[in-house]
Length: 388
Image (tube, rainbow, N blue to C red; front, side, top):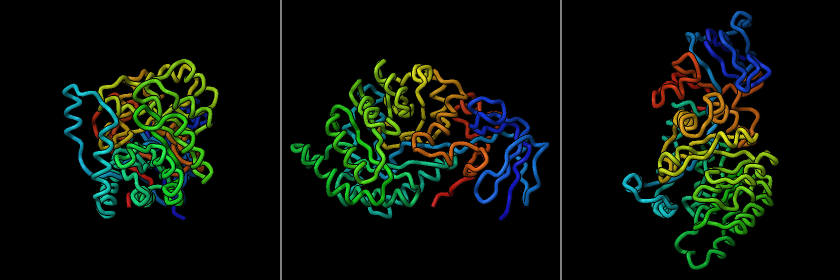
């Protein structure tokens, strides 16, 4: 088994507080890292590094865990740039544009959708993302949801069934009938491809009772629960996520003290998606308030064609620092170890011995440059699963 020594690491982010400086990032300077069999075998001061079969000198650059993007919608077709332009001209955001993407996605071939996802996954990887969750939700028929998840599974094990994205036009007069479809034939077809089930719990999509029914049906099929909630206004979604002890609840833009207390008490991860607020001119979530209350926070891109068409986790880190009250260290942790927590994973998002050797090398001396130099392509090397 071949081993690789990364030496001359100016700053190594391990995300293990037992290592390095004892902070949540577990920082080591003048460090080295040994990879063997796709796992981290050793980390420590460069002067103590063991021998290895091969050596890579990173020239004093920073090395950090690969980003864990725990919320994306990559299986889609079509373009909604005109909708974005309208929002920038003052038209308020609503979820209605989802149906535009549904029509385009239904009309696309499997080959077109697979190629489209592949391009986006490769784009993410160039920016340091090594783990990505991918949702369905732009098919909304039994066939189209199942094929979306089958395509997602080509690229990731973290596939999420989001048949409950919106009620499609053909069920507009019978939303209860659509919930029956989602929890019946659609779930039956989707479950073999998915690890998770998700619901868009917002006014105009699915209410709390519908969301509970769908999530409990998914749980009975062995799927973990996730939830879109409290994006467009204050609602019951965060409380429902905590009641059901879901691993994560996403968006969390509008929260009251009871919501924050529930998140802190249950340990449900609050996944914040600053690309959405950037793209919709909506208020940003208050990351500082959540962190000060002891809530576990993750950052994700929510890459989708309507409300957040960015694949850049570095952009999300910069936005979290500039707009959400988070420090550069907190934002980086949320985009790596926090994302792993949101996926129930302990093998990614950190670089301690035994973890998967998924990492990014920055053309910078410190991770702080992710926020300090926003928009600059700093990632010069990525190790982790290669795009298919």
